Length: 105
Ligand code: HEC
Image (cartoon, rainbow, N blue to C red; front, side, top):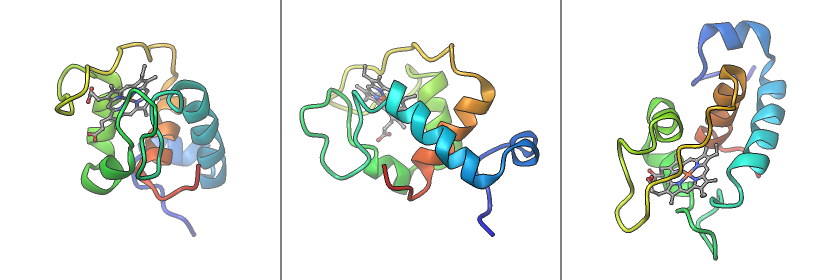
């Protein structure tokens, strides 16, 4: 049984883990993958690879990067755009879960 580590109990109750992964993957592909890779290489993308973040930062910190992008900024990069208000709480939980856990892109 896969435990949901990052999401609030509300989401745990309403989404099975596999659904969280699938939703997180599609939210990531639509909103994040143009700027971030999940592997070690950022390639030509404007944002840092999230491979480091998923190892060194917990789900709360990853969530904060999305909803309050100005609060902490990775040195050497422009601040992440603050343009994710359209994501629902459920989509946010799912994408944080997807980034925070070792899920293949
Ligand atoms: C337009 C490009 C762009 C998009 C789209 C974008 N980001 Fe970012 N992101 C950045 C940049 C640039 C940084 C580095 C500066 C900073 O920390 O704000 C960053 C930083 C981050 C960090 C912190 C990384 C670290 O090592 O601490 C996380 C986590 C993150 N983004 C997650 C996401 C997620 C999840 C999405 C989709 C919901 C997303 N980003 C969409 C450009 C983007």
